[in-house]
Length: 415
Image (tube, rainbow, N blue to C red):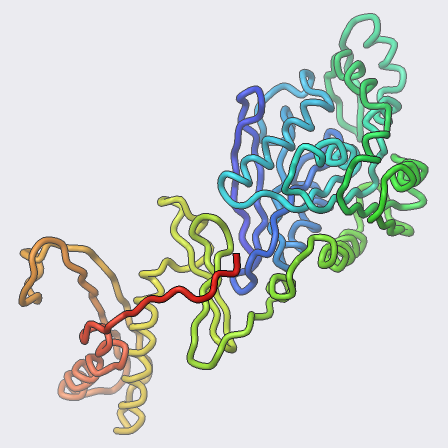
């Protein structure tokens, strides 16, 4: 799996930092998700990273990010509030839409769960929402301020300790939280909802989960986390959330059968001798399939890709190089040559014809492939020369030199 650093602007023009957890190369991306962390936490908390990695392994790419003023994101935490968190979520969704694909799934832990419940109705692409140890409304957080509430009322700001860390907060945070004391918006969620909560949660009472579940309309599901703590600090608890989440999402994200098989690493139907190429995002990422194998191609980040797979020209060179190596090995085995190992290094360039000494004709820019062989073993000079000649007899080499005819047709339109 790959983690891609993502930066985007919030509504105030500040830069927020995120990580996009993507599937391993053999697993195409079926959907994109947004993960909202708990109050005063960050994107790198254990629960967020473990759940994101597990989902990515099943084909759901997950973007987790630091809210304004936290972690690696710009801004002053004292100037933030629940409303700004919701706006940050919307900005993250817009960044996914612009560079990859709009999120179909929102996941929120603790106060992040309240945030995704508030943001979901503003994101048309979202098909499902998941909360983990979340309060029904943001006003639940008020109890974390304890005796500091009096100081906030008098001085307008105060130092509060949350989770063994100190934070400077302002009265505007409390005022904003008071605006989110009504859970009636959950009746208009209009998305599939999954609620995770531990009965013994000491931070957010399970009564909050009951309030979410009772207020929201179907389809909705509840899963008890038994002995888990609020932070899901036990690895097995986080993995349990991820495994049950992906099973639930298979139905409620409306994945087609082929997309659902993609998320589990199973290739779509492909005939023998055929290659299938599918889109995995709206830029350069592509799924590559034969009857029994699958891979991905992409472009480097320097030209706008994610660099999650070889580029099309890299794949062309790989085809030529692997065919060259196979052909040399077949010949060496047949002739009983003492050829211990073969390395084929290739490069593709666009050069001016005038600069290409080995090119016999052509003007302007032409394609040139340079192929270098490293042949290890007890070989005579004559044998090495013969192997050099055999390399040019590789079937892919001959196909490229013969300028194959390529015909293109449009099959039935499924759209």
